[in-house]
Amino acid sequence: MKKALIATGLFGALLASQVFAGGIDAKTNLSVGYLRNPSRNTESERPEAALYNIAGTAFMSDGLYLEAGDQFIFKTYSHEVSGTEYKDEKPVFLFPNAEIVYKHGKLGFFATFQVAAGGGSLEYKDGSAAVGGGVLKPLDIYSVTFGENVGVSYQINDIVSLSGAVRFLEASQTMETKHPMLGTMGYEASGFGIGGIFGVNVRPVEKLDLSFQYKTITKMECEIDSLKGNETAQGAMASTFGITKGNKYDSDLSAEFNAGAGYKFTDALYVSSSFNYYFNKQADMGSALSSSNADYDDSWEIYGGADYAINKTVLVSGGLGYSKQGFNDDYNNVFSPVLDCVSFGAGAEVSPIDNLKLTFGGMYAKYLEEDYNGLTLNKSIIMLSLSATYKFGL
Image (cartoon, rainbow, N blue to C red; front, side):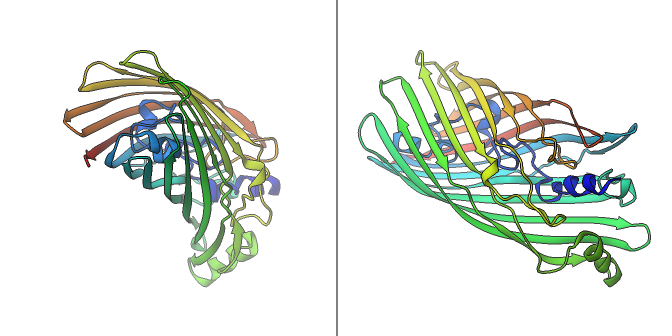
């Protein structure tokens, strides 16, 4: 296998567990509500507004809101060369999110916990074409970046609200494989970053919502905390891949621009559209397994969706979207392919008692196969989700 393939393919080691990413690694599926209706950018009734439309929290009704949820992800990532297929089918059963919003008068305060990037494990039982042509196996990779948003919103008048938040990121990555003669090889790495989020929500007429939000680039540097295996294996990691304890590399999360428009056609029907743009070219995306940073193009995605309240107890939702990714001829992710996709989501929100909402959602992402450095890259994802939201009145 050519060194060029190994070098570019191994960028995936730190971006490897992107379960559903709008940017190269930045997540779009930040909450359970995204699966039932992926057009989230005009949210202003539920606490997940603190993830998708922070200024929308100022338009929520007064009260204290608590939400917690989890997503269950079933995936197949694969790359094929000369008729030999290497694939990962390890499911992800823990992909949590939690939000708390306190709204009183014109002020809103919020805090969130979510998977901001990465978010799962990859297990290539037969190894990978990008690492020794399958000689090193099994190949296990784990990558997750948890995020917390803490912020405040203010409703200037009946038309406009503003909001600002601080975003904290904590990255953790591990890779482990076995060499037929040297045994276990691998590393553990971690990093931390701080960024900002700024939002505007506009309601020019009673039934129309317009939202605009910007997430700054979050600069993050990861460090190799430890190496796995005996001294001989660690020496081989250093000589082959340049990986030694204390090495550092860039792992930025790109800036984002989010916009949305929604209209309440009737008391029961709300229709919305959402647009996200990711400034990948501004971010330094490195890897423990390469001496240089990747150079992905910018990416974008667009969604449309609808919520329909059947009655006071049940609301059903659905939506679809298209994601144009930033891969190019020089950079992709062999382990977790970066591919354009069409996604379909649907679900329901049920209120069994006053102030309690249970949300169920499901999504299927159809990815478009691509050829990259002699490999055929493909993947498919099915996601299911469940959350509970409770509102305490003031």
